[in-house]
Structures are given as structure tokens and as C-alpha cells.
Amino acid sequence: MDRPPPRKRDGERRRRELCDAAIQVLAERGSRGLTHGQVDRCADVPEGTTSYYFRTRAALLRAVGMRVGEIDLANLRSIAERPLDPQAPFAHLAELTLMQADGRGLMLNRARHELLLHTTRDPELAEASAKVVSRTLDLARESIAHLQPNVTDADLLDAQTDAVATYITGVFTRLVAGDRTVNDPHQLARRLEAIVAAIAKDHLAM
Image (cartoon, rainbow, N blue to C red; front, side, top):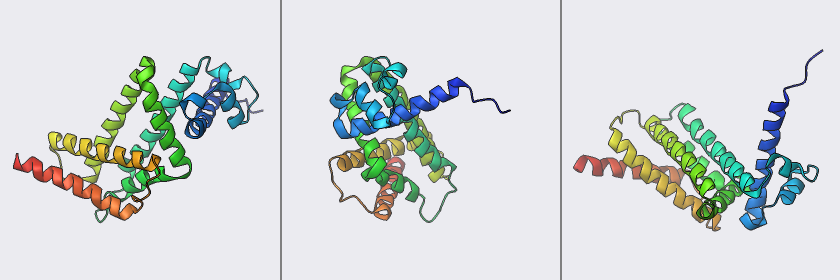
């Protein structure tokens, strides 16, 4: 007779499901509308489930922040794990960026912005967010290096990563605001290529 899976694993899955529901609540109602009861209803679980796993609203927000970071990191890992296409090296990154324009991607994008605003009022959330951002930038740098196998200059990779991350952050903000003029993945991929090329040219001129 098979044994049931460990309760710890069930608990981890339930926390993840509740965080995913909280992302939807954040996206639809904003940080002020995020309550344990709203998450219970969104996740279709018995009343009190969310408060059992996350005793306070602050604990829930921090857990959601970690979940958003987990999803972002998984997306970045997919870039480094994907075979390089020399003809369109930045195509996958462009596609991942524009996934934030609608559906679950837009919900994640809105939730991310709500969390960023809330970090100014929650030092613990700000600290946790800073760690996630640092890891995200490290993975972004690995991705930029993967997309340019001939580039080995550490300072150049740092500068390119900073420029690309800043540009994509701007695109995310425009998508949250409802701007859909950035909607062509091929055009976005070319722009990303142009950014890293311009940084490389400037770096060589220094």
C-alpha cells in the first residue's frame, strides 16, 4: 500500500497555491484589497485557510513577494537553459517580456508593482525584495552572457545587464499602465540587441 506524501510537501503546495491566489487578488484589488478572506475566496478554500498558513497580512505579503520572485527567476533560468539561436538570440527574452501584457502574465506584472510600492512601508518586505532583486540581476547577467558567448568582459556584461534590466522594467511599467504599443516580440528582440550592441560600442570607446 502506497504511503501518503509527507504533510510538509502538502503544506508547501498549499502555500504556493495561496500565494498564486494572492497574486490575483493583488492584481485585481491592489495591496489595500489584499485580505486573508479575499485570498480564501479566490483560492476556493475554507475560510481561515490563508490565515492558518500566513498569520498576518505582512507575512502574506512577504510570501507573495517571494512567490513572484520565484516565478521571475524560473523565467530567467529558461533563457540560460534554452539552446542559443544565433539568428535571433534575444527572441525568447522578448517573448517572456511581452507575456506580462495579458492574462496571468499581466496579473503577475500588476502584483509585482503593487509589492514594489508596498516595500516603502514594510522594511522586512523591502529586505526580502532586495535579496530577490539581487538574485534576479545575477541570473539576468548569466542570461545576457549566454546570449553573447563571445563576450567575456565582466564590466561590459554588468553594463549590458543594467541597461537591459532597466529597459525591460520600463516595458513592464508601460504594460501595467495599459500601453500596448510595445507588442511586437520581433521588434522588441531587435531593440534589446541594439541596446547591448550600443553598450558594447560605448565600452570599447572608453
